[in-house]
Length: 521
Image (cartoon, rainbow, N blue to C red; front, side):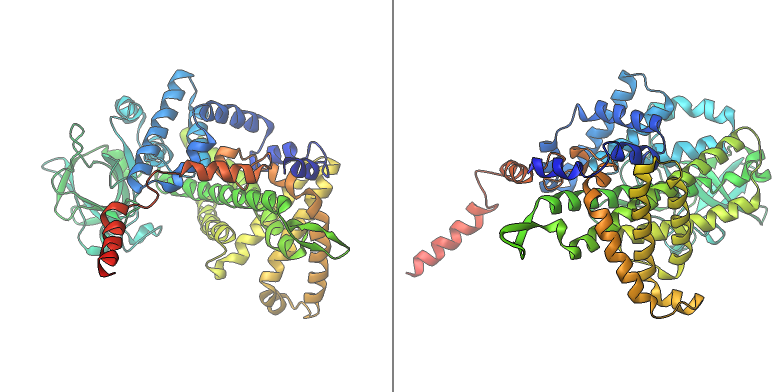
């Protein structure tokens, strides 16, 4: 089986996978080399066999595992003296590799980013040691039970009490409960909470407040704060049904709105992280599908009855999996562009420059559309009404990335780009026929073009998914092993689950049932 994948890779230019990984998956050669180096640091402490056992663990054991992983990551950061950029990359890699968000993910991805964007240098300096040492474990509490990204509709209030020089935070209604903030149920002891600022009866709109949630020593919720879980996945609920008082942080920032344009920027950044996550998840799935389809034999070749056919050589299978490769590249390309935008915007604000309001409005609209489109392309699901605009952006960014490729790689990837365009046109053909007066006869032309493109992309499918740069541990799939030895891996994996007592409850239930039947004989 390993010879099969090696043979598949020989169909493509030797540099295809690396070149596409640098342009699409990582964004540059330097980023790819950094990613591979840091992933090596982490995977030296992991194994494919250990990753496979994750599927049999309880939720509580999985939680212990991800906490252990988070601890390992932070230990490696300290041991290898990683700078801030490499440390953030290693934390992202840990999620890529395991597929599980560690309980400390939002502490770094949203809480610390929000602190850095909004609060003063003096405040950041005062809190830095507590944040970096995990004495403070933070989260981002914006979403309410009845309200999501529409900041103007948030109901949680923060009333300034001048005689106490404090704020009184309150969730006055059921829909104002802070619901769904990740890490809040079990991990976080402090949060950036978004609430409406009320001063002497006047509503100054939504602002952010640093709020302690739990005792730092005991981790018990403070009076006036109730936390809970949403199902077995341990998502979070935050309520402050009774009033609670918090020290005034900085009247100038809160009242005058310094850096006001960055108030919502943390959520924009997370949307683009979600896009990248969609590309990662989709590319993992298609990598496994392509590799296994290239190896798996099923059915006989009509022209040679004694020879079985590789599943990937069936046009129906190509139609299922090859467009997913194209969609993955499209999402990767777009997420790289908008991630760069977020980085540049953050730098501008840190340097005291203002961001044009129109730019932020556009970023909000684009991020909303792309989050939906990327999720749909990944899960094949939702919100068709906002899909057309988002897909236009994906096609544009995919096309723009082609210009930097070498001629041989560009030729192959252009066919992949065309495949993306054709399949998206087919899905929304009725809309295009109605909106831009395409003739109905275009349906047949698109099908013919699709068949030709599937044939053009098929020889390079394995090399193309290699460009996603997933390690075996990251894929965590016996069927998607890079060496192609899928059947050996299946057997080894099945032995990991072998137990002396193969049937839980054998002694308590099955044996008494047998004795009951024996007594009736």
